Length: 125
View 1: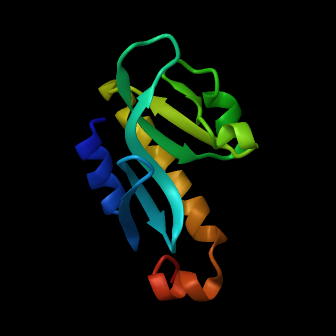
View 2 (view 1 turned 30 degrees about the horizontal axis):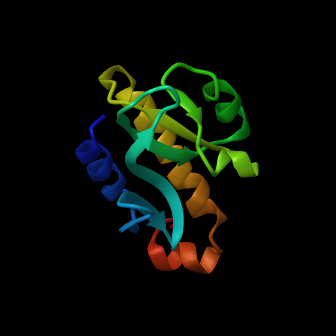
View 3 (view 1 turned 90 degrees about the horizontal axis):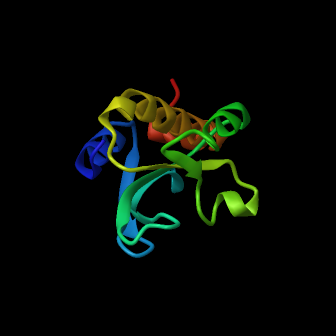
C-alpha cells in the first residue's frame, strides 16, 4: 500500500478527519481520536526510512502481528503498553490485510466514543 492509497482508504471512513502532525505524519482521527498514522519510519539496522502505517489492534491481533514479518509493535505507542502495530514498507500482497486492520482500528476507536458523539458523527445508527 502506498501512502496515497493509505490516505484514500482512511478518508473513505465515516467522519474521518485528517491532520498532518508529528513531523509530517498523516494522522487519521474519528471524533478527535487517532485510528491510523501514515508516514516515514526508521527501521533498526537500516540507513533509509521506509513507509510505515500504524494502527490500533485487539489483543489477539497484536499477539499475531507483533512478530510477523513486515510488522512490529509501533514505536512509542507499544512501548507504553498500548496495542498499536506498525506495518513497514510497501508490500501490495498485504494490502487487503492492512485495510482490514485499519478498518478494525477505526471501529475500535469509534466504538469507544460516547453514544452521543457516535450519533453526531453518524458512526452508529
